[in-house]
Length: 362
Image 1 (cartoon, rainbow, N blue to C red):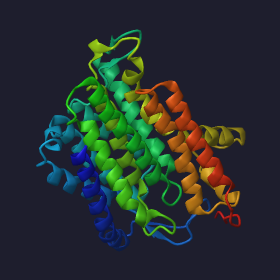
Image 2 (cartoon, helix red, strand yellow):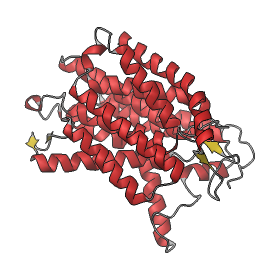
Image 3 (cartoon, rainbow, N blue to C red):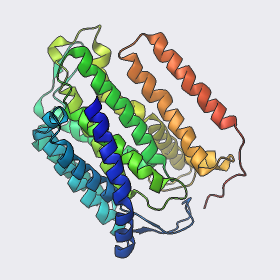
């Protein structure tokens, strides 16, 4: 645990220190978010935050590779995640600068998922009525779908200062806790790629947040949101490979299903927002992909919450789902229920605390 904490702190410090330099380069090369009708920010702001995150991850990998425990995590899967991350950041950089069309971005995301497959990162089995070994083609298709869904879910919530980085940090903490406790309970090596990936993921989010909280000095852009989504999905997929399918029983079904369910559980809020947005637009006779300013964070802002308070509320909603689901895999149901009650109570308290004047949403 100590080495993973060191890894987290190193990645956080590096991301915090590198981000101002990347911001200057984004301004220099024109990777800037201008003001649109649905935007909340009122000043053109630099993008390319994902580049700072990638640099921090790369330098962290170089440093912690020499640690006794964490160093054992580096192998084929870690290389695959690094190369796929590099590709997705390059794609995001191009989009942040030149505004690529949706089809081009989707093709790039499929290509990145293909890199993971080449390095052996894919779904091999599912715990359905025991164990169902998947044909390679089905496993590869499922892997690509999970990567695409998680990448775009994170990209979807990146609509307000500090929102995506905070939610992904909470998701990463829940995922790291699950991966580490699973290793402890099942007795296999704690030097795993999922633990390493999520420790770095949490670190870079925490290091980036001070620059991204309202008023944001830099946005993560698509280079950041797609990068974070890729790391989260890759951690989920590699984690399934650490569970011995032959050890699965009805009693242990929860922990074996959770690696695939957790990314969707921790991203339940953006998924809900996505479903509401599609339904809202279809009912209005508009394209489901047409942007608007009626997302959950827009509504919380219109209710009189400040930008940072709105982000905090959505953090708490995410934690209300993420942490109890993780607890449920290792503790009795009543412990998970208490966890839910604590977070729900905190959320209600924060929402009812003194509100400011309704924010102006542009």
